[in-house]
Image 1 (cartoon, rainbow, N blue to C red):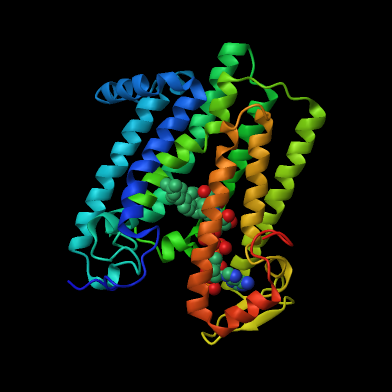
Image 2: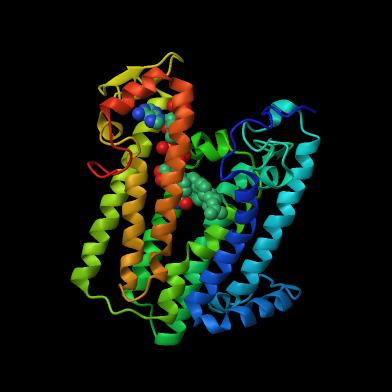
Length: 360
Ligand SMILES: NC(=O)C1=CN([C@@H]2O[C@H](COP(=O)(O)OP(=O)(O)OC[C@H]3O[C@@H](n4cnc5c(N)ncnc54)[C@H](OP(=O)(O)O)[C@@H]3O)[C@@H](O)[C@H]2O)C=CC1
Ligand SMILES: CC(C)=CCC[C@@H](C)[C@H]1CC=C2C3=C(CC[C@@]21C)[C@@]1(C)CC[C@H](O)C(C)(C)[C@@H]1CC3
């Protein structure tokens, strides 16, 4: 079966070498972070071996929630293994999928690269869409559950959860609740429309999101932080500003894409493209070319600040997320330039900043 993309098409993520390095680096980073959140670096290898031994035992539901924080390492190992096995299944499944079901990327012919990126665009069995399910369910719900377990554990240890723990739980619950509330919006993200379903997304959804996105709460359990009301209020304000921009920008684009004559967006200035679709050039999308990323990054800052400034670990998410969004923005711009050509160039001329006005 001929892949839709020839071996000489430009490869992303550093090609097969980059994909091979990421296959090892992503799980290694996640385990390192999980360990760094709980102890000094000397216990890294002991804990990894212990995790490997514990995995055979597994864990069952029904354990008290406060016990979960102690099981994060074995659970993360099981999640990683599951992601690997699941990605293998997806790779095999793509061998028998029709060419029309394959993703535009992820079909280079190099097995490591294709395993990492994913060959099939939206693998399904009957009506069950694996990618859509994984993107929104296990990772996001697992993340909230781990956060909650850490809050319960802190209450067990110290009598009540700290203000910092409440803030981190509240902000991230709002973010996950928002994603689930607007779940149909995920259908227009490049993960669904462009990327295949391979190790990158499977690991991201099943392991990376629940175990590394909960790092701030993990950190707070072991490193309690005093937080006064004025500082807490300032952090809430930062999160509210971030959320306002994130939600405003995403909703404006979604409303416009669904119905450009909706009164909420009908007055906005647009650029016509040769495809018949229009690009917003005022409102949130006239401020920078990715206002939703800006809002998301401001929220990421607010999630780290309750952890104080004594340690870099709670800021991992902010740093990783900045790198992810800068890379994602570059990929999206490439795809938009291909799709919209001159109209996209005109948009870039009229809205010169990508994410942060006057900075980037
Ligand atoms: N927490 C996390 O780990 C992550 C969160 N995110 C968040 O997910 C959300 C979705 O992000 P993502 O899928 O990357 O990208 P966007 O939601 O920004 O979608 C990009 C697409 O929007 C359309 N578009 C771009 N500019 C305009 C314009 N001016 N007018 C109208 N349409 C335009 C184009 O598609 P078209 O023209 O075809 O409609 C473009 O391909 C973001 O809020 C992001 O922050 C993303 C990744 C990880
Ligand atoms: C390092 C690594 C393993 C990268 C894989 C990236 C994934 C973790 C992210 C790619 C796009 C994502 C999105 C969300 C979560 C993270 C991943 C899967 C998302 C579901 C978070 C909630 C948002 O509201 C969202 C629905 C817009 C978002 C969609 C993209």
